Length: 308
Image (cartoon, rainbow, N blue to C red; front, side, top):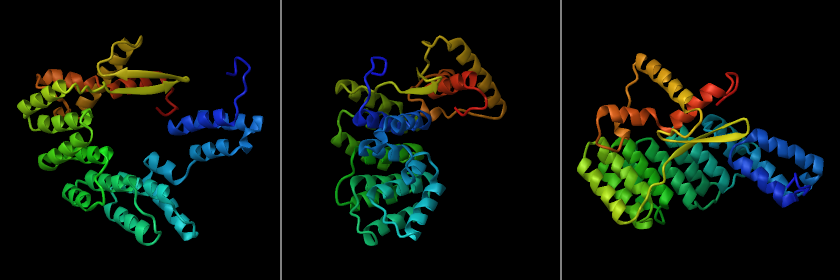
């Protein structure tokens, strides 16, 4: 638009700033903040709202996993007589989940209803499911779900199922997977997470049965990917990716890292591999995970004084 001499209006600029807020790209968002000041569009509510999202407080701390800052800021709000809304409580409950503060999360959830008169929405209940599930309190999570005024959404069931996979709880995992399948029969998450529970217990026949079920129902899992931004360009990697022009350097860097990790006593967790293959093949799958490729790229090209 700018190359063609077309100046953005407030809706266009607001959309761009919101996009950077969603990507947590503060540096680029700040550049468009400057553009809003110079152009005078800062006075429009659409732009101002987008900038508030970009520079958010409670939700932003929660999004970046800074649970203590989130809770401290929330308590400060209450002390100053500011009234939190439902969105604020989503941020606080998410922070409690990240930090494993189960009792405090329960207190905030109860206070939201009793002290602030806010009716919990599905997102609030999902936060509570996440809070209990992450902490390994899967039976409590099941009891909480059974007492909810409505059934969890797909995110809630997937959250519980993921934790069942982590803690190896087959019984509740099956319940969550069946509930998720009933809600979204084409969602591959239930198949993949339940497969991982079976794989962790080396029940390969059940893994194969789930894979056949996916194939018969036409359910496909999109390959996972990881990406890293460097010099205003996004580099995307998939597992065992050889398409990058820097592949030789990346895999060389990974091998150096793996040697250092092994020397420090690192032992890979084979339960994350959902295939009944030789140990060496499993190690290769884990070593060439998309996230590791992206990190290796960052270690090679991002200057040492900058964060990845």
